[in-house]
Length: 188
Image (cartoon, rainbow, N blue to C red; front, side, top):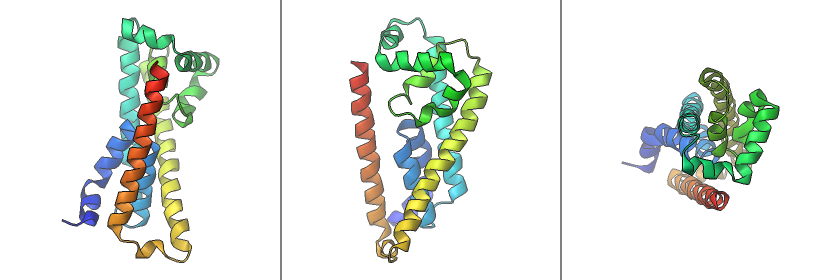
C-alpha cells in the first residue's frame, strides 16, 4: 500500500483524532491533502469539527462532573484557569465561540465552562457552531497554503506525496510536543 493510499484511507480518521487531541496542525495538514486531491475538503472540515466538538464536550462534562474533585480544584488555582473563568464571567457566549482560537486556553476552557452555571445544551449549541467555524477556517488555511505553494512555480506538484506526509507528520508531532510541554508548564 502506498503512502497516498494510506492517506486516502486513514486521513479523515487522522484529522478527526488530531482535531480532538492536538488541533490546528492536523486540520491544516488535512486541508493540504485536500488540495492535493487525497482527501475531500468537506470531509476534512466535518471530521475536524466533529473531533474538536466531541473533545470539548468531554472536557465540559469532566468540569461539570468533577468540579469539586481535589485534582480539579488544584487546576482552578492556576492562572490560565482563572483567566478563563474571568473571561467566561464577562462574556460567556463570546468566550465559548472563540476559546479554541486562544493559545493556552483551548484545553482548560471547556473544563472551566463546565464548572460554571452554563447549561450543557447552551454549551453544546455554541460549541458546535464554533467547532464548525474553526474547522472550516483552519482546513482552508492548509488548503490555501498548499494552493499558494503550488502556485509558486508548481514545485510542490513535483514533490512526492510521501514527503508531504512526512512533513505533515513532523509538523503534527512538533505541534503535539509543543502542546504537551505547554500543558505541563501550565499544570505546575
